[in-house]
Image (cartoon, rainbow, N blue to C red; front, side, top):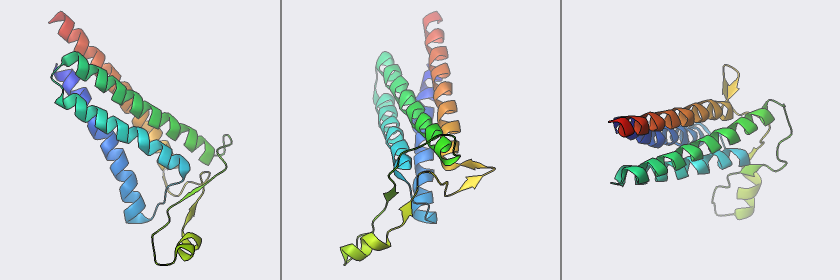
Length: 161
């Protein structure tokens, strides 16, 4: 059961850290998200909710099911991140629209006209040549696979113990 509990905690903490990092980047460092960046955030939020529910659930099988669903959500975010990174690196064509964050002000037209436009095909930040979307891909896919392995190991131990 310990492996299952650890998997659930990973399913909570990984997306919380990734989503928290994205929000810090946005609000602390002005790295405004494009539309595909926003797409990556929703599955992380869903994973956090599912993992919290799994932690509260007393049923082992129900907790495992919720943890699997959380891992799938994390995996989906990672795959979106992989697609987004490919668009940023010019490996394939992405979506054509871009996103912006419109600050609320006294004059709505001025707010719209002065809002930063964020392109989906340009990485606003990278480290070692890997963009934020690329890091989301690496961390999310790896984390989701690790959660699946931990859950499988926990079920196997429970079946034999």
